[in-house]
Length: 302
Image (tube, helix red, strand yellow):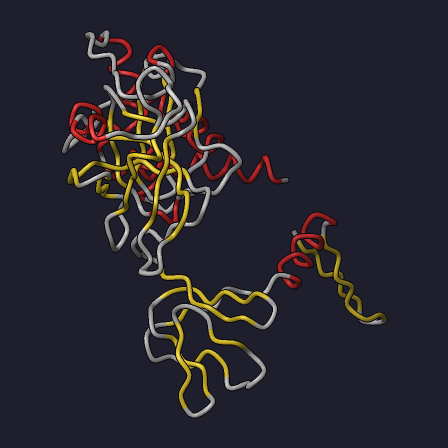
C-alpha cells in the first residue's frame, strides 16, 4: 500500500509499508530468471565457462535447449524446463525392471538410458552377506522379474551417462501394492529424505527421477522395508480412497507447476477436503487446490 502526500509548498513524500519495502529489497537483490530458447545469446562476455545446455561460437555463448539460465560463479548452464532425468549419486529413485540380464537387471528410471542394478548390489533374501554364486544368478528372476517396481539409490554413474543402482539398505527393494504416478523430475524438490509417512494414513516415495509411489502406511515396513517379498493382501476401501485422493492431489500440483515435497503435498491434501475424489480430476478443482497450496506455502515463508 502506497500513499503520496502532495502539498504545493513541499516535495511529494512516498510512504510505503515496511513489509513492502522489504519485499522490494529482496526482489531487487535476487537476479531475475533468464528464459532462453535454442539459439538465443546468453552472454557475450568471455570470462564465463560453458556448462550443460549451451555452446560457444565466435566467443559468444548460445543456448542449445529451451530453459532457464543457471549461473554458478563463472559456470553458465541452461536447465531445461522439460527433460529426462539426469541422475546424481545418492538420488532416491523408483523404477521398473524391463529386462533380466547376466548378473544384472535393467531398470527404467525415466532417464535417457536404462539403469543397471547389479546382482552384487542387492541384499540377498535373509540378509546373507556372501559372494554371489552361479545358483544366485540362475535365481535372479525369482527375486525380480520384468515389470516389477523397485525403489533404489543411485550408486554411481557410468561414462555413457547410465546409472548404477543399489538396494543394500533395508528401506529399498521391491514394491508391492500401491499407485505409481509419473511427473516431471524438475518438480521433485531435493530433500534430506524422500520417504514420507503422511498423517492421513498413506505413505509416499518421491523419486528424484519423477516416479512417485503411493502406498498404504505400514505395507512396505511389514515386509522389512523392501527386499523381494511383498504383501498382496486386500487393501481396505478406506485406504484405497485415501491413496486415490493423494494421487489426484499430487497430479493437481504437478499439472500446475507446483514443487513437490512433504509440506506441499500435506497442504494440498488438506485443501482438497472440500472436493470428492472424482471432482479432483476436474481442471478447475486442480487449479484451486494448487492455488490454495501455494498461498499456505507463501505464508510459511513469511
